[in-house]
Figure 1: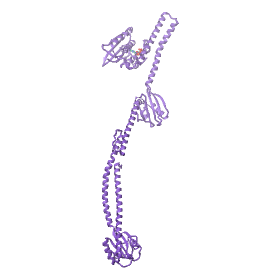
Figure 2: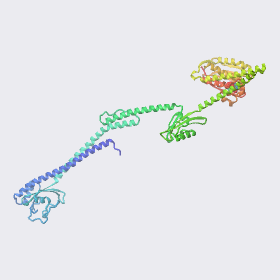
Figure 3: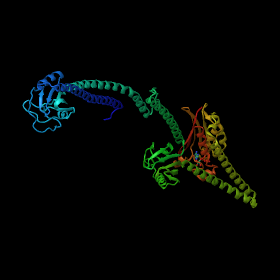
Figure 4: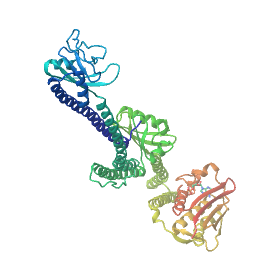
Length: 592
Ligand code: ADP
C-alpha cells in the first residue's frame, strides 16, 4: 500500500500524541501507586508507633486493646508477644499464651495471618524485623483471596510487637479510577490529535499538492507555471525553485527546438541526401533527399537499413563502409541512375555511419550530352572543312581549267555556307541556353504578319521545287512572346516542310486560337517520317536520313532550336507524321 504524505503526517502526529499519552499514563500510574503506598505505609507506621506506646504503657487485655486500637486507627491491629504468639488481633479478637512452636526464622513473604483455630508458629518478616528493634514492612496477598495487604510492625516494650495492616484495595480502587479517567482523557486527546492532525496535514500538504500538479505539468511539457506558494517556508523556496526550473527548462527546450528546427531546415533544403544509422542498423537521421535517392518509403527514421535502403548495392556499400570504420566514397550505377556516396563511420557508435548521397544521374547525362555535342559538332565540321581543304589544295596546285576551277570554287562556297549555317545555329542555341527565363521577351506578336514574312522568305526556295505555300492565319491571332523567336520557329518549320516535302508539294501554315492558346500548324504532304524516329526528332543533330538532310543543307539543329524557343515561351511542340502522307508540326503558345 502506498502511503500518502498526508497519511504519514497524520500517522506521525497521532503516534506522537499516543506516545506522550502512554508515557503520561504509565508514569502517573507508577508514581501515583507508589505515592499512595508510601502514604499508607507512613500512616500505618505513625499509628503503629502510637499504638506501641499504648501497649507499652501496660495496658491489659491486649486482645481487647487490639480491637479498640483498630477502631481508632482504621486498620487491623495485631499484637505479638515476645515469642511471636499473637496476643491480640482486631480481626479475630482472641489471645493465647501458648508459645510459638519452633522456627523463629522469618519467612520472606506470603505467610498467612494466623487463623482463630491455629496458632501461628512462624514469624512474618515484618514481625521478625520489629522483634529485632526495627520497623518491619511487608505487602502480601492473602491466600485464597486476591486481596493485597500492607503490614507495618513496630516494637513496643517487653518485646511486644504491634502490627498494623490495611488492604491495598483502596489504593487500587483509586488507581483504577484514575486510570479510567486518564484513559478517557487520552481518548479525547487522541481524537483531538486526529482532528488537528487531519487539519494540519491538509494545510501542510496543500503546497505539496500544488507543486505536484506543477511538476506533472512540467513533465507533460507545459512550462508556463506560476509560483503557487508565496510562503517564506521550505515549501515556498521549493515552489520558487520549481518555477525557476520550469522557466530554465522552457528556455533550454526553446533553444534546443530552434536548433533542431534550424538543422531540420538545413537538412530538408539540401540537395544531397543525408542518412545516419546507428550501431543497430537503424536510421536515426534522414532528410527528404535521402529518402528520394535510396528509394525507401518516407519517413526513414526508425526503420532498419534493409527497409530504408531498397537498392541492394547502395546498402551493401554503406554497411561495408560502416563496418570498416574508414571513410569511403564511390559512385554506383544501377537502373539508369548514378548515385555518389560518401560514408563516414560514426566514432561514437561502432557500426553506425553518416552517409551523404548525391544523385549524379542528371549531371552524368549532361556531361554525356556535352561530350556527344562536341563530338557531333566536330563531326559536322570535319566534312566541309575537309572538302574545302581538298578543293582549295587542288586549286592552289593550279592544274585545273576555268570550268573546273569555277566548279571547285562553288563547292568551296557551299561548304563554307554549310559551316556558316552550322556556326549560326550553334550560336543561336548557345544564346538561347544562356538566356535566363526572366529575360524572356513577352510581347504581343501578330502571328499573321510574321507568318506572312516567313512565307515570303521561303517562297523562292519553294518555287525552285515547285512547291506551293498556303497561309491561313485569321486576323487577331496574337501570341504573348518574342517576335524574333516566333519568326525563327516558323522559319525552321516551314523551311523543313519545303526541304523534306515532295517536289511540287503543298505546305500549309495555319494559326488558330483555342481556349486562350494559339495553335500553329505547319503541314506538308511529303514522304512523312517513320514512327520510330519521332521521339528523337527534336534532339540535336538527329537526322532521319543523314545524307539527304546534309545534301539539303540541314545542320540537324533546326528542330532543337524550335523546341528550345517554344518552351522558353511557355509553349509546347509536337510532331505527327504518317509515311507517304505527310508531316504536321503543331506548336502551342500562350495567347495574348
Ligand atoms: P536539319 O537542319 O537537318 O533539317 P532539323 O532539326 O530541322 O535538322 O530536322 C531534323 C530531321 O527531321 C531532318 O533531318 C529530317 O530528316 C526530319 N524532318 C524535319 N522536318 C521534316 C518534315 N517536314 N518532313 C520530313 N522529315 C522532316
